[in-house]
Length: 486
Figure 1 (cartoon, rainbow, N blue to C red):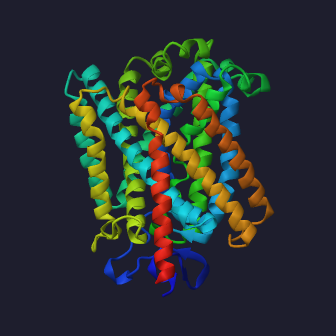
Figure 2: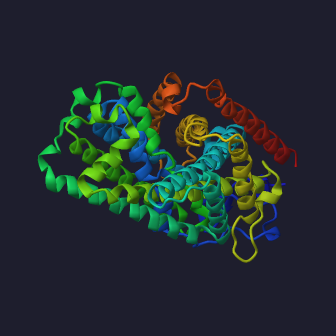
Figure 3: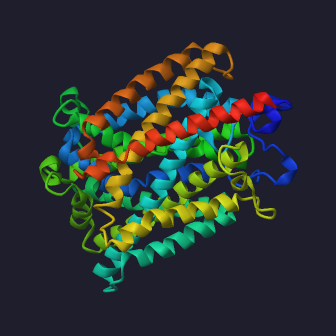
């Protein structure tokens, strides 16, 4: 029996260079809908996952207050360059293999089924937890906004239930509709940040100095924390590849969407961070006591008191859009792994009318419920309990996945199985791998500050990554052995 007919990548003429994941029995269930999403939709699903406004109010504000201060500007450019290096190998893999479980097939292509299985399980854990965290944040910030500005005081869990219903509906109806919602929310964030930038520039144009790009500023203070916070602000930027099966000409569109999303995020983060630096005489001193208040304080000073309420509502919406984006990624990993036989095959079914992974969508929402119920029952604060637990796991998972992918690109290129890749791709991937490993070490060394928690339970959460990687490696190896025996 040919392994390619039972879940391994199969050649798909006339484009014989690109291999696509297919089910063992293609007639058993239709695949994901081709043409459901285009480059703009993919770009904004990626942007939604990064939630630019919330990144400005959290990771980048933390960097301004506790990290390198205005030197954050220089690090945004440097991390952007590092991610361009990583993307070279990532896109080469996307031209070679296409699957809703992108990291799974990318890592497997170069490093083998065991490594691919490990990456698949780690990505599945990370995206499911990230979605649950975004759902909790949506409920929390909706509650804060409505309590403060409308006098409506309900438990945050009520709003999280509503958010879960929205996420499920958008997942059921498909990536096309979800991407439209993500586009609207992303544009709203861009408009709000742009209005603030214009207001600061109009009143204090001389404050936009270039000191933050000098070597002295970049290496000052807590530069190690800044590296971590800046990289985490881009988390999920590469997710366009998870929609490869739902777009036409995936090799080209994944490339365009990934580079466009990365460029757009670098531009937005750079301008917005520069705006905050310009808005304060000493942004580090202003941010250190309460980093979360820096963005709102600048908005109220330059735009008026109404801006606080607008930011609160938009932050809640941005978390909802991020939940939608991570839900779609998690559901597609469930679908791809079910189809490949690494998880129960029922997950690999698609809706016969809508061609969406409806079973995986429902299971993903159920996982969100299972993750959040203990926090709700225990009366925990989502911002000090759910988020610390999830941020550490997702940050280390991201590093594991990106390093594995970069190594896979190098190995595939050396073997000559990577389309359109040569010495340049290998070199850039190796540089990216070294840089990402350094960031991973910084996360481990500063884990308490990254999560914002000193809880032993939070510190133990990365064990999920190890367990997931081991389970995935065993599943990948069993699956490969079964195919060979067949």
